[in-house]
Amino acid sequence: MALFGVIGRRDMPIRGEGVYLRPSEMRDYVEWSTLREKSRAFLTPWEPIWPADDLTRASFRYRVRRHAEEMARDEAYSFFVFREEDDALMGGLSFGHVRRGVSQAATLGYWMGEPYAGKGYMTRAVRAACAYVFERQGLHRIEAACLPNNEPSKRLLERVGFRQEGYARAYLNINGQWRDHLLFALLESDPIPPGKPR
Figure 1 (cartoon, rainbow, N blue to C red):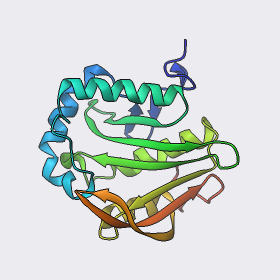
Figure 2 (figure 1 turned 135 degrees about the vertical axis):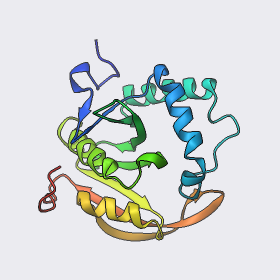
Figure 3 (figure 1 turned 90 degrees about the horizontal axis):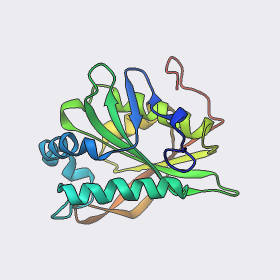
């Protein structure tokens, strides 16, 4: 039986260098809520405003169910990122707005808990996840956006091979304000950056 529609058990977890990714489960609630709360000040400048009930068990249950339904409908693919050596939950990554037909594209988003940021884990997770959606989900193009002043995110995207393609004014509502974003994309046919395998 398939785990989530077009994602089968043989596909999970997605393995990367020292990291692995899998869909969220209710057993992740305590670790997720603790990490998010501990990282709140670190994440706030880069994310939409958190709802008042964001870290509750009920909200997490809804999130797990919604992500499973989106995967089953081939609309989005959401994963948690874990450190391989000790199974620590470090962050999350998603491919949203999946477009099929002539597009075969999706939009990448990610977050990393403060204790794990800047150590290369998300670069390795994004590399593994992009390889997965290209090879197993048949995508041709992955798009990403980041705030112009988010240097770590820009460097991450460039390390993985994304190219900047544009600038979108008032693109996303981040921390209560409509903010401009840099637009990036990675194509299935793009060359792998030298010395940095996918």
